[in-house]
Length: 170
Ligand code: HEM
Ligand code: HEM
Image 1 (spheres, rainbow, N blue to C red):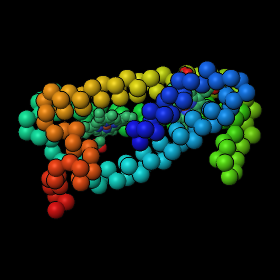
Image 2 (spheres, rainbow, N blue to C red):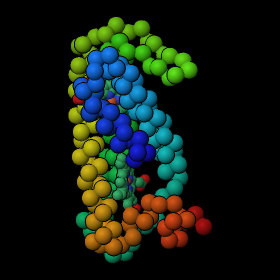
Image 3 (tube, rainbow, N blue to C red):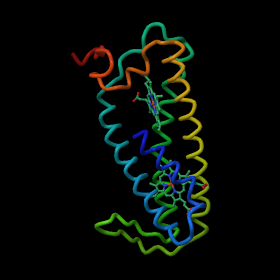
């Protein structure tokens, strides 16, 4: 999902740079990757609902304990709301989804009064996500290289990281 979120973000930032002839193509690719992120996020949230991460190592400080949860929640929330705002922008720009094998056209006339504000909001919220991801990655690297508390290794599959304490899931 990291690769997909970074890709969809870069494609988003490039929207105004494509030659006019290929712009619709690239915006459709952006939409496809964005929809994939959204569907994977749904699957992840379903799984996450029943799979609690292990407790933080005891030497993790008060500040990290207090702020990591709201930041992670916000990362999830942003990934959740950005795609639907993108879908509204896409449709009200009169665009149709090209899934390769089939197309989905809502036959909506391009309406600037709708797509202009939603495009702005979609972009601004995406910038907030990028900023938060930057902060999140810095925090992960700080845990790994400076605090050396093993928090980063917890994100890898159990086979690569040390055996996890699964708590109540024994
Ligand atoms: C997590 C997923 C997504 C991220 C991070 C993202 C990010 C972005 C960014 C950064 C921009 C440029 C905004 C600007 O220049 O102000 C953008 C534009 C746009 N995005 Fe997304 N997007 C996502 C998902 C989607 C989805 C699912 C759709 C549609 C199905 C979509 C449709 C659009 C459209 C139509 C534009 C405006 C393009 C234009 O006409 O210039 N996005 N997006
Ligand atoms: C698109 C970029 C990223 C997004 C949207 C993202 C989002 C998230 C979210 C939502 C969580 C909470 C997981 C949960 O409790 O369900 C999380 C955890 C974590 N992320 Fe990321 N992440 C991204 C990139 C990265 C990168 C590049 C690193 C490493 C350098 C990283 C390191 C971590 C670590 C170590 C945790 C676990 C924290 C813990 O065990 O409490 N993330 N991430």
